[in-house]
Image (tube, rainbow, N blue to C red; front, side, top):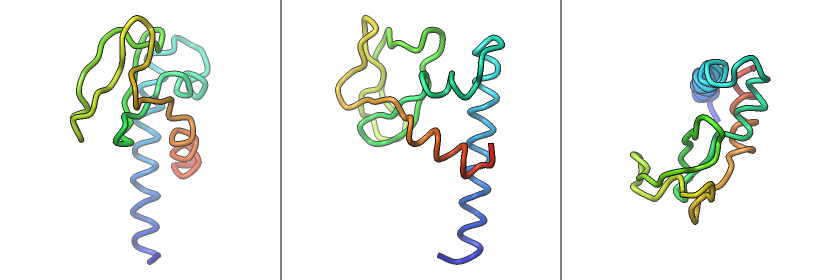
Amino acid sequence: MSSMHRHGRRGRAREQAQVLMTLAAAECSGRDPVAWLKTHVFTCSGGHMYVIGECGSPQVSARCPECGSAVGGKDHLLGPGNSLALHMVQQLLEEGGV
């Protein structure tokens, strides 16, 4: 991997991590923003991240704007193909220097 590619990826990870941390700080009301991210960031079946606010449990289904797969769920149950993005969040925070 070239040095420029590595720095570009690290810069993008830093930007994504900052966006997630800003969102978490606004949503988590004084609680640990990293812990909030680990319970509110999900991926669709296409691997794209999305966030469920408030309690972190899905109330509605929608479509991923990236790939069109179902995101969310209903009645506090995550829909098929969706999962918590624990590994992705941790990787972004590490690569982003957070």
